[in-house]
Amino acid sequence: AQSVTQPDIHITVSEGASLELRCNYSYGATPYLFWYVQSPGQGLQLLLKYFSGDTLVQGIKGFEAEFKRSQSSFNLRKPSVHWSDAAEYFCAVGEGAAGNKLTFGGGTRVLVKP
Amino acid sequence: DAGVTQSPTHLIKTRGQQVTLRCSPKSGHDTVSWYQQALGQGPQFIFQYYEEEERQRGNFPDRFSGHQFPNYSSELNVNALLLGDSALYLCASSPPAQNIQYFGAGTRLSVL
Image 1 (tube, rainbow over the protein chains, first blue to last red):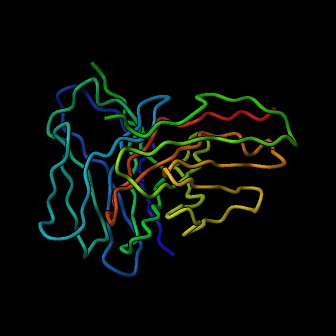
Image 2: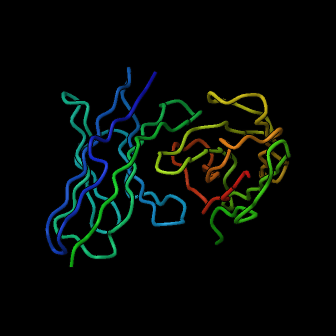
């Protein structure tokens, strides 16, 4: 069965500093990988996705993520954090078939210090 | 273009009652998935509907059931509510033959 681990429950970062959120997955085949962001009381917004090809993918809001097959990782990065980036971030893996059930990690809550 | 819409926004029920949550997918989307997100956790897959049939199901009891209508909208029904059913219920829709899910804002269910 597939699984997703986000080792950091909370991360505090200063505004303007860089941010990296870790994600490790377990999946037998080539995974479909996603990062979503959830603001308090809201649903999930898709930041970016990886299906195949270039292992560095660009997303919305200045985020990028790198797929590393050898490490089973898909870490999310942002060079300079804004106060509005304070939210909870979820990594997810999807099955490759058309039945695209998502398995989510436990999430990382990001706090931004002024 | 409206996104995924869910109703109601909030709901309070008592143990043993039954509840129905509703979801309208994005225009042009034909697949609807439902997730349960307990406080402080990541969403967990309940089931997915395509062509008015349940295509996949997660590890949830039969108390959780659903339906998809010809216009692709969907309902999630939970019978015999338990305190542990208190959670945010998220609906997601997908375009035809694409592995991308777009989420609604969710329905917050509180069971007292």
